[in-house]
Length: 593
Image (cartoon, rainbow, N blue to C red; front, side):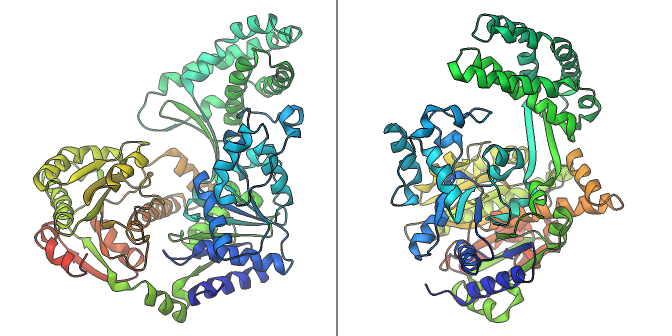
């Protein structure tokens, strides 16, 4: 396996940092640099040197579990690796909120290991069809493996405890580590649903008395007063849950009865008993446990009312809880948060390594990914600030930017990606996009909440298309629309408005927790960092291959301040919205899109 110069640079720098005893190493490795190969090489070296005995490679989604195994096989990396998929995907009996493996009849029927983990999900289906348990097999293999690949969420402390995951003295590798700031321990439940479940306690008692667990009915009855008080508190929360803005709930949740902790323990015991006979009362018990579990957590943590839900959160990423016991953590991303933010949020020293730290490595990368392939256009007279969104002149400028993208795609072909700060902003543009679609005869697909994958599939078959999406949603986070050679079919990305997150009490509490003396300053830093990550992720949809060429339009004058961060490579032009429309063809011909 021959490594490229920039890959050797990242590997050597990361290994040196770990040898110095650093606990957090962050690699900002640009698109196409081979981030997965870099991470696997670091893992292999640390294992060979005996500095670690185990590593966990953490990815954002279950589908991304396959990527490290493709590189392991492609480059012949000699490491004993296996995936770990949770019960929701691999358990024949599906997922339930407590560990039933010790009493489950499937536990004695592990599935044989496949020849390749790149066919993981086919193997899971076939294993269940053959009456063997893939989940038990994955758990056993994970215990024996040097490298375990799994999604972030499985390392959330309360989930890791259920899965019996022990990370002591291990290396944790986080892919797409710009998400690390969002890895917050969180539990939530719809308030209306929680009320309906708790108010069904008489039905639970009635069902319990008719079941094989009838002797426990009096135990449930003992908690009826606590349940009644809880219902009254939830009704109070319900009365204010219809407010559009998120609000703190601690004034209410701190009044929740302490007896709920004991009630939760009772429900867990009853579920274990019900499982032995698969008693029909099991379903009701599980529903009550799910509700009570969230309420207990809400009484112990900062809690909020958001969109009709009660949400309990920690104020720091759960990674912080592991730093003292692990050998180290490697964060990799093309859009890494700043060293200052990482250190403040994780409350730890961070070694941040960028391609710009080494001239030779940078030059080797630029020979492959030519900077002149990308033109970055910054618009200096448009903004998406809340007060300006419905301003008549500002709307005209937005329309000019949108039409410029249609004009370029109409002339050059490919896909144009329009990225808006929020779904409300996208809704404002829908009518204008429809008119432009008719004018230029180009299919336009608008992302709906949760419908990013469907939107992508809808434009893939088009020679010319416009895809309108929201920053930070499915389409702009790690999605690729490429041809058979892996080249991006997106030729223009227009980020129409800086996607600053909306103000929330949660962010305010995080800022105060990080630095009580400078909460406003920290809050601004958090908002800015979140915005920049979303912008850079959206821009990254264009450049996936050394041959990719295109235009990135940063349409918000607030982004000019960050032009050197957003566009460290290639040509930069600054112009007005109207100039962009007038010069659309000229700008496009500058790189022969």
